[in-house]
Image (cartoon, rainbow, N blue to C red; front, side, top):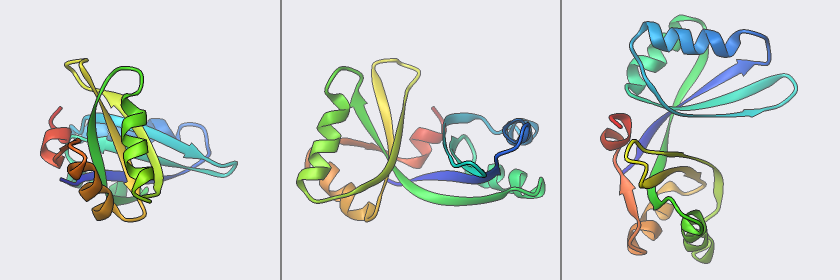
Amino acid sequence: MKVSQITVFLENKQGRLADVTEALAEHDVNIRAASIADTIDYGLLRLIVSDPVRARQALMERGFTASETEVLAVEVEDRPGGLAKIIRCLADQGVNIEYLYAFVGKSGENAIVVLRSEDTESARTRLVDAGMTLLSGEQVHTL
């Protein structure tokens, strides 16, 4: 139950994010979720997209450094404490989270938390054992 995430290295320059989104649009790739972590000189754009392979090709054709990473997508009730339940589950098992971001699906009933851990397999096992719902790449990419 792993999901492919595209990570794009972006120079912190005007118009670079526009270039990324236009490249994806031109190749009919839909962005499902996005997160940017930045420094003074550069940013890391993390994307969940409808077609990770096509997205990566489109970005590399435009000269972007893009990589594919496996992350977990956990469905969580969209209510106070929903995210805390996931975080506590992993913390109590000694699983460290490197980063996460979330979005609400089309139904609006549940949120989807995308996370990366030092040990993705251990995180997956702990979440499944705790009864959490993990989504497959196909499920997330076709939302």
